[in-house]
Image (cartoon, rainbow, N blue to C red; front, side):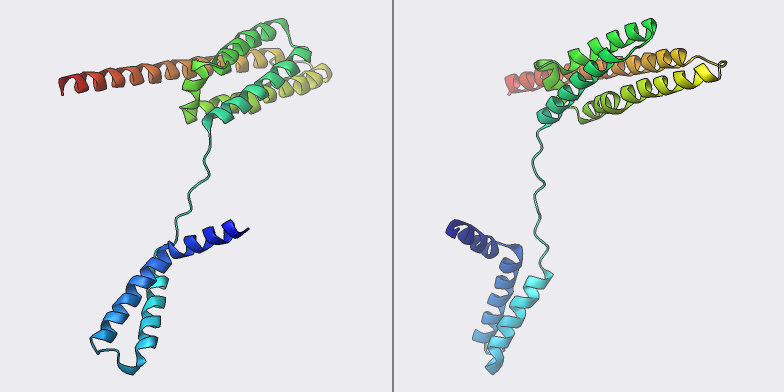
Length: 203
């Protein structure tokens, strides 16, 4: 309790407003010693302190630290739940095969190790994978199930199975692009480190 009070007091003393006000208050003391403030010197010092505190920029609040690896860990858990859910859903054989390939790719990207560490350093890649796992795939499957029910009542038109296969193909192509981007990012990092070592060797 006492430690918290001390921290708060130190925080107030070190704040920008107090520092700016103190600097202006010192100017007021200087004016007093120079004989400019006269008998009203306490008001001058207090006024300058208040003016300094008012014009000081507000304190910058540091954003909370976020660990990208925690997001990848949470995404890995969501992918496991999605895979278990799709294991219980009756999918057409072709779509099931496509999901198996897509699931293997997602699993490889999220598997604990250096690949997941590379993924954690690319926020856009984490976002794209998160969107696919948490929204796109479940929505594809859910829409397929609902549309298939309606197509039984009103046959005709493109089959829901065909749409599901196309959607999974598109998601697989997106995951392949994501994998290629991560590979390129790792190659760029390697090239940058090589250039750094070469520059250090020359100096």
